[in-house]
Length: 444
Image (cartoon, rainbow, N blue to C red; front, side, top):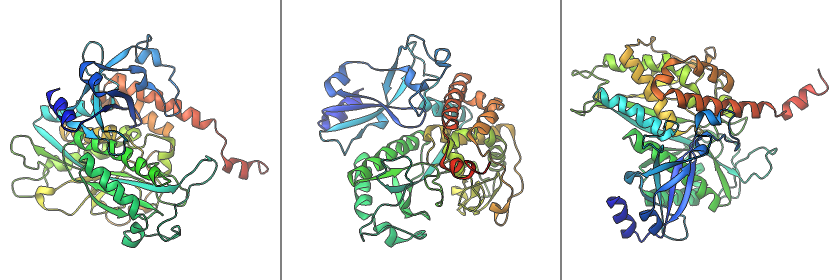
């Protein structure tokens, strides 16, 4: 706590946000005056870890957490201490690890799941490195859920109507918002790199510098809060839905991954001559073999599967290729020391801790089980048959048949995740859509 105490004093912090990432990757927690934070333990009910996105609790609640609704102990991570630049008073935000009453890491905490996977890498003498790319849309305020989303008005007083991929002028339409976003990111020490305008109307992508997976997951978690807050201050919304608009591309969270030797720091994806190593090929093989079982962590919501649509800049199969953006697994052009694999399956709506954990788990299983990949795909992979799950229900069935997910994440977490997501699917399945009323009401 010495490091945290000194930081709070140096920044004259009056209040601390004690944050915990929930299953969806959103912030749960409490506001605590600084003096109370420094002298009292922080606790939260462990039941927040088994709450659905609709606010319900699963039927299996009492099997997953204590029926007495007991507290879990929160341990602040000094590496996650940041200013909250949009708060009125000097405020810190600190991400906490969840521990059960006996002091062990809580098995249903999503941040702990990533730490469990990283421990497996460390045991092998490996150190994974990731670089996320996060896409999102800026949209007009939407107070009616039945109303379709649309792009906000830009500086010109107009809204986008056509594809503006990589357009500097289109991005500059939202310059005041982007400038505030960068200012907030700088104040929080987020390692954001480049920003581009993606192909959707008012769709942006922000890239992060590569680094430690836990550190980057924390940054993506913080970045999502930052962008939403920035948009609200400008009278609009920012959304990380995987497929917010039917005629626009979905939003992804692409993950660039490599693995270094912990002792030497050398990239184990290449040999001493600079050629691709067996570890690299096995990592790809693992991504191909185990992604179906882990796909619900890349596509966690019912809306996520609408993104897996041909010719909409999203993967639909398990192929890999060299500098091929139509495949789900892409090997970018790079120097040997920067050899990496880009995982294009995760949507922007994913929990970054779980998406990174799942991606690294697939690669780890591939390397340890020496899984050979298929031949690299050449050409337009979007013309191939769709082999990814198209519904949340299918993805959860694949998870239930994946023993490796239980091996990597633990049986209690997999059970909790499945219960929550099945509950959400059933809630969604009760809703009758406008499409059904339009085409089935008088025609069947």
